[in-house]
Length: 215
Image 1 (cartoon, rainbow, N blue to C red):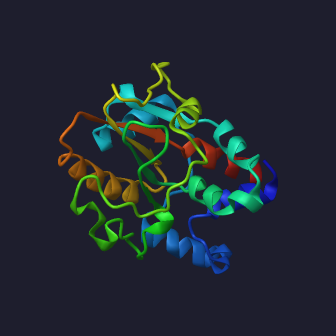
Image 2: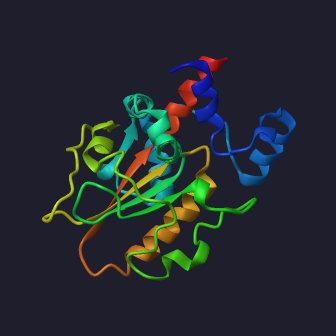
């Protein structure tokens, strides 16, 4: 990845140029509970999964090929779609096909210092009302192929014989907002009248490694 891209992915969440000033950025981070990125080893990964009360057998870490896949897509054609898939916290709802049916992303959740994940009362019903525009840039299989586990779990799939699936993309450095969205997703899934599961994909290492390479 080029230097410009690494800077963009580290600070994409903030969205406006004024936040590139260190004093402003530090204040924003403190207000929103944002930590410095840190490499997620197996021990740390398990620790934060316990905080989320998440099963370890459905937990993965995204690899750098995820970013590489998005980078090769034509920016002129897929600029908005690429920006959405780069975001740091996401919940993607899948029925029984390859592409998301509902989608929640941090950049579509307004508010400061707490994000309003439930804007327009999206989570009042199941399935919830999508907050982000849907696309077909990244299939479920492609996303899962870029997810690695410490224990070499069997890769998940979607289809008619599979449970309703939510892919929850999360991280430690924004754990406060991770927990807030996770709570809404869990409560909303209680309204689901069919078997369901949550697949957890952590993206800390992408941001931590990019920050180290910039130093």
